[in-house]
Length: 83
Image 1: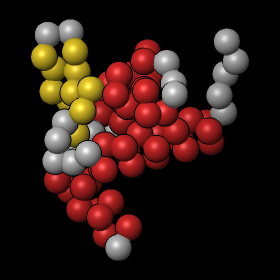
Image 2 (image 1 turned 120 degrees about the vertical axis):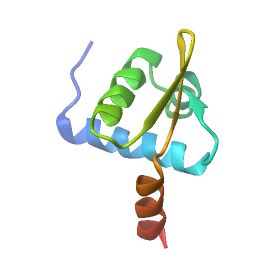
Image 3 (image 1 turned 45 degrees about the vertical axis):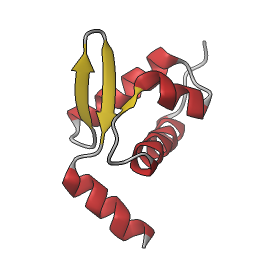
Image 4 (image 1 turned 120 degrees about the horizontal axis):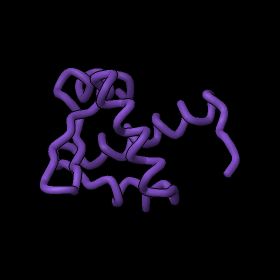
């Protein structure tokens, strides 16, 4: 498996945030995001965990499945950027 550059990984994280923003205020599952990006579930989960650690996304766990959403302050900043 080839390794992605930090720049490409950051661009994919931006796409992850865009998908979550477009589905707000609903929380969405990891596999939905992975399907939208045509990426492996485990890769997307790793990116989401990194975003969560840095405070960009919220995690809600239902058993083994994880759902993701944006905290209010991130949602509002994203909304201002797109306006």
